[in-house]
Image (cartoon, rainbow, N blue to C red; front, side, top):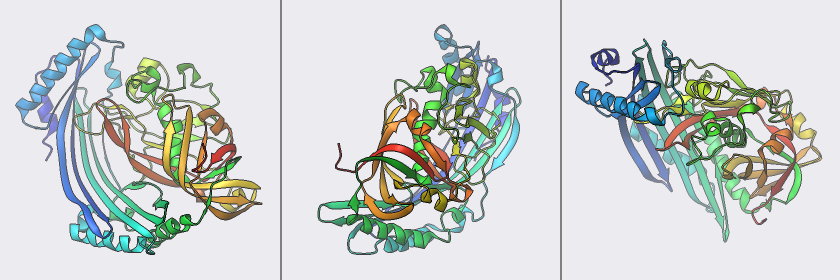
Length: 480
């Protein structure tokens, strides 16, 4: 268990302007079944403590997986030496205002605690799901996975911070692969681990679970005889599960302030967005309203405070198409002198917090789905990301989806396979023509967003309605 961090902090001897301790304890399980055979079945414990100091405007870090006072003191000494060594290379003087004194707590909503199901119970459910996925002999592979995480994060500081947050997370994945000779098609449950939410087993054991699993298998088989997606410049309608990827790659990453500052160029690239664009750039059409919102119950990246203690709140990043603020921590906001949000996040106790997405959502519009489709004479509807490619400035992209439907004369008609589309970020978001209403809005999660050196995989949530974009280049799997 995590000891009393306040007492531990008071026992340390560090000559610093500010010192903070962030302890983290994570217990995770992973159970997976493929072709009726368990492939993963284990539990993992990961815990430790990060010491962060500010000395003469420079940050230093030290970490240890021991809570022994002497080991933590050694980590603090290492952090102090690191900060001192950084003084001659410092690009910006960090002030203690970037580490605000806060007190509070947060706990994920949880109706069915994670300990109510045994490992055997979970494996039995996954085996049954695989049987539901295997709707015919053409389904050559069926996979069902369930991941749980119980995460405790405790932050204290010399300025008086005392924050404790407890996260309960359930991640689920279902997929079926169908084969007919040389034709192979895969269908998944809105993407890999897209059903990832804060909560308990109620997030996995939903009323529609069994129907969803059977539908996945049936659609995988359906795609074997579907027409190839045509090459055309047409109206593109994206379901919320594909909008998740679209928001993530072409809005979230380019708005991260550390990318704009150049901190990420060596590993993950920069951004086409310039510091002077905030408050001025028309990022998309007036229908585009994007919010940063870690306050939504159940969405994957909800919290009350980020990992340096900044209070989380709902804030517009893009309003009526105009860029207002970025995804940047208090430190990045000071460096760039632009508005940001509470998004300094660390994936583990041995990683420093960096600028990350959390819950990044597109606000719903006012158009019901039947009315949205009825306004389209010729178009293509796509679901579920299958592949993606985007340049290191987050400007030019090409995405592929698992499943598509033709839209003709205001009606959804034929199924299409191997659908893809491409554009540049500004032209794509400026082509946003119709935004579905609240009834079309859905949120999903991705627990594997990678960034930073050393790498940090972190969990992110995205919500969106169905959206329609005009004059987008679409093409099939055989097109160049």
